[in-house]
Structures are given as structure tokens and as C-alpha cells.
Image (cartoon, rainbow, N blue to C red; front, side, top):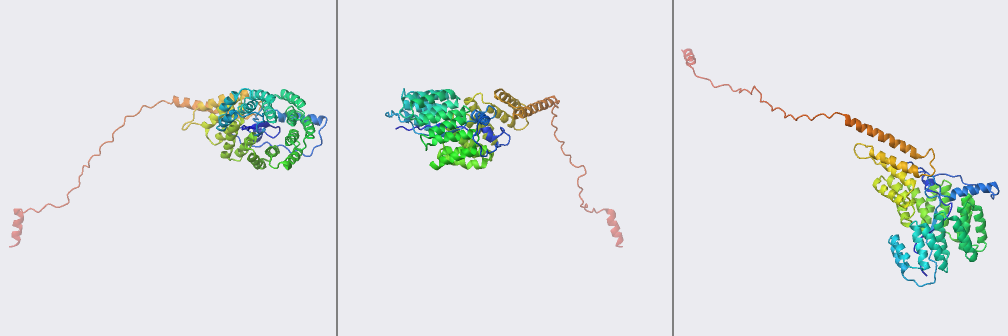
Length: 471
């Protein structure tokens, strides 16, 4: 039995809100949480109501092309590797050491050289998924499934990879065919039902999952699919009821805790969500979306150190996804660490070259990072360049998008600083005056007189007078 040491994130729907839902307007605006009204007890949808619910589910299932960065979250597990019944050649162990050291590229290289070993292929599919190579991950997972005796874990890898690249139809058809040819596979039937949520058919997904549950009444994974379907329809009270049933079986199930926390987010109770996310991560540190959301909540509360740690951990977990870089760059900007934030946003663009939010945040940094001393127009011009790239890559740009406000500010300040520089250049330069030495101080003309009287002189006249007086 070999161990799957890599995290296998299993995407789930509706648990999460996007970064935009939690963080609100991009930097440097105040972080806010989008509030939604908690649904009261609802009758079973039918007819037009069902169509409305399914339309809302499509909005939840499809990544928002506006300001959302993580509309479809995932609950990341770390299940054991499928047992291929073969001897351990040491390849998996070598790759495990490389991955533990944070070198996923080396782990990928080791596993890629293992030939047709299905266990190594399944592990390599996980590595490629973490690196953001979703198509390669899906291809490897399909190939590995053919040679494995126990396929549950590798089916989850395939599901994650195909959902990440929105390959819903091909995934659904594959899972249906596999479930038909392997009628005992609860995992294949359950995942086939779950795909329907992403296709905008949550009520159908719930119906099929309930049928699967009849074959395995205490299967927690199937119950999670039912909960996700209700969440996609915003039937939050029903969702919580299903999650409570899961917790009756496993009180500390991390996925159930994660979904509970996301319901609190969706109903505007962000403070209550924080300890639930923390508890979920305590039981499974590999919940990628929980780390992203907890980082955003910490940042909203002013705990920048805690937020930074969550985003850094998320990047280590899934370096091929962009949300961790965007969150880390944002919190570094708030901490006035502009140079470090720039590097992180440029890394985000390496992972996702067309991501508009990295361009936006680079513009915010240039707008905020003023030179010491006299202000200059250059950094405002750089901000304008980044804002224009944001506009070019944002797919749904509303008329009240904050980029217009920041663009106008950057243009106004650039013009103002350029005019000021021109005025300074037009001021005539005064030639320097020669330095004059101060005049030497003259001695006073009237020196101090000697007040001592001169000695008396003996003249003849005087003696004669004295002598005459003696007569």
C-alpha cells in the first residue's frame, strides 16, 4: 500500500464565496463582505421556480468574470493513494521527499520518468494539478484509472482537474460510462451527480445523489453532494440539515465544517465564520479555499500578519492557482511593503497572465508608492499603464468599476506634477553671489585715558613763594 502524499483538492460548489464576495472592492478600498439574505424554509421547486433556482445555481457554479477570483472553491483532502497491488519501486518515495521540500517541479520530473506505473501516474496527476497543469493532470488520471484496482482516489483527481478547466461534459460522460461498467463504484456515480451542479442542474444532481445514497446510506461523500446541490439553490437551512447529519457520523468532518463556514459567509455572518474555518483547517490543513477565505477575513479584521500566513500557506499548497498570490500581494500592500507586493503580483501574472486583478493592484501600488521628497509624475504614469491593462483584461467591466476613479486620480496627479516641473524649469536661475569676507573690526580711536595724576614738579617760583610765606 503506497501513500498519496500530495493533496488532492476536490472541488465543491457553493461553499464559497469568491474573494470579491468577501473582500469587496479591490485595494485600497475598505474590505467588506457581501451580504446575502438567508433563505427561509422553501417549498420544493417546480416549474418556473425550478428554472430560476437552476439559473442561480449556474451563477454560483460558473466562475464570475467580473471581480471574483475564486467563485468555485474546493475542499482539499489528502486521501491515501489507490492500491495498485504492486511493489513500491521507490519512485513515489523520492517524489514525496521532493514535494515535502517544496520542489514540486522535481517531484513531477521523478514521477514522469516512472513509465506506466499507474500509482506513479496518479500521484503525478496530483502534482500537475497543484502546479496548475489541469489538462495534463486529467489525462494522467484517466490513464492511471485503467490500470488501478482501486480507483476512488484517482477518480477524485480526475474530477478536480476537469472541473478546474470547466471540462464538464467530457467529465460527466466519462464518469457515467465508468459507473455503468463498474456498478459497485459509489464514487463514480456520486461524482457524476456532482458534475450536474456545475452544469447548472442542482435539483437533478440532488435527485441522482439521493438514489446513490440508497445504495450506501451512510456515505458521507454522497451526502456532501446533496448538501452542495441545496447550497447551489441557496436553500441554506436544508443544506445545514444535511451537514448536521454528516456531523452525526463524523463530528469533525473538515468538509462539512468548511461548508458551514461558507454558509455563514453567504448570509453575512463573517465573524461567526472565522472560528469554523479555523476548526476545519485544524482537522485538514489542506483546505485551499478555506485558507483563502480565512486570510481575507483576517485581513478585513486588520490582522495582516495572520492573513499573510494563510495566503503563504495556500501558495505552498497550490502554487498553480492565482488566488493565494492575489491575497498575499493585497495584504503586503496594506502593510506598505510595496516592493514585496510588486514581486508577488508579477508572480501572479506568471501563473495567470491575463488575470485583471494583478494588473489592477499593480496600478494601486504605483498610485500609492510616492518617492521621498518632491513628488514626480512617473509613478502616476506607470499606474495608468497598469489600469489600462486591467481594463483590457477584465471581461465584465461595469460603469461604476473603481478603476475609473483611480485612473482619473492618476491622470490628474500626473498632469499636476508635470505642470509643476515645467514651472520650476522656467524659473530663471540667479547667478551665485561671490562670498564677501566681513570687514575687520577697527580699534576704537579714543583709547582709555590714564586717570593717575602726574607727579608734582619743584619750580623756583613755588619755592620762592613758600619761602616768602615763612617770613
